[in-house]
Length: 474
Ligand code: NAD
View 1 (tube, rainbow, N blue to C red):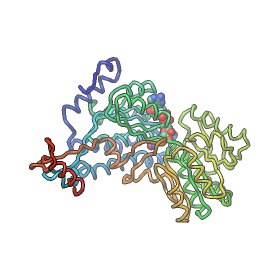
View 2: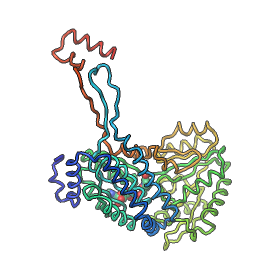
View 3: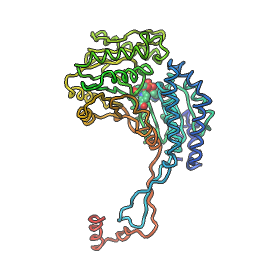
View 4: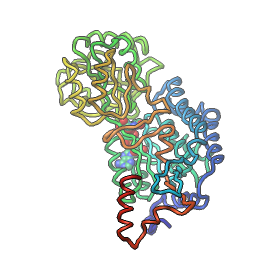
């Protein structure tokens, strides 16, 4: 056994964990064809068997419009599976590397081997996408996995449990439903990798638990993602994209624009353009629009209401929206300006349909504002100026950036997705997800006598000279 397991005997999930560990150790690792078969089965289940019920569950949990669910949940997972299936053969191939002359007589390569038994903990805002997305990478890399989805979206979690039961054997992939206590118990086990998506605060709890077993982690976290609009930007085009990226899923998106930093001279024009696009997307009565989502729980509704009240108390200006309905957990698309620096809306990740606007006179002020906060998951730039764009890119750090767009970098499987420091550790999607769930095992194969043997002890003057020559020439 890898660890002293006695301490886990009372853990309700140890038996399950042990089953997966024994299976992993027994088979060595899943073959290419087994991984492809697992991915195909998951694809069929999501795309065909369960598609309708997935859309229903998302509507029940989040009031998510059908088209949005298709695009932001089903399409994303299917895309991830197709990408993995198309590239897995190449990813699994041994990767030859050069061998230095000083190691003459040997060849070197590395292989991606599965880490083993992995834990995936997911959030509620895109329940299917953010649970099955990492699972695709875990399977592609040949691991087994225990999944703990969010308790906030019970219909989606129950349906995912059903899908996992149908598609996988228990000793390969299992989904455990439950609240925080369930996560806490799972986190006590000596997993080989933990993939966590959620808030930075819980990310710290996960990393602390992982440290006990020196378990590697991927942390996909959140935070405040800024958007800069400089005076050269096409205001109308920027407004259209921002209104789409901010109010989709009622702003409950990790990479949504959290706040706007805009050149003072174009603020009014931008707000006017936002109003136009909001009316176009959701009508003048977004509450009656089939295209607009709801806040996930009463608790999150109250949190957002408190942030809005805090802004109103300090005379911030509601430019658009501001209406709330507690019973249906509705918050209108809201744009707000003139906030005090210490306003809650400017201090904490908003994760809802409220967009603060902060003006600047000089681009340097916007850059300083970003750098005074934690490093963001995403940073968006709207500008026609190459110089300004380059200046912003060079003087800030972020997990990802779109120039003259927002959110869409998430959908390109060829790009690494993830944050930096407070907004995340490690990357996901496509090859980067496969890599996160793999150990890069370095292998040196000695096939003839190695010249390095000439330098083995006992040492003498000649070997000393040879060592110096090696340093100089090889
Ligand atoms: P959360 O951190 O509250 O919960 C995430 C998961 O952790 C849930 O399954 C939950 O049950 C579990 N959990 C909660 N508290 C825990 C604790 N004390 N100990 C152990 N486990 C615990 O996050 P959330 O509210 O579900 O999601 C919103 C956050 O997630 C936002 O910060 C958002 O930016 C971030 N997010 C990030 C990404 C990304 O890809 N980077 C994607 C979606 C959401």
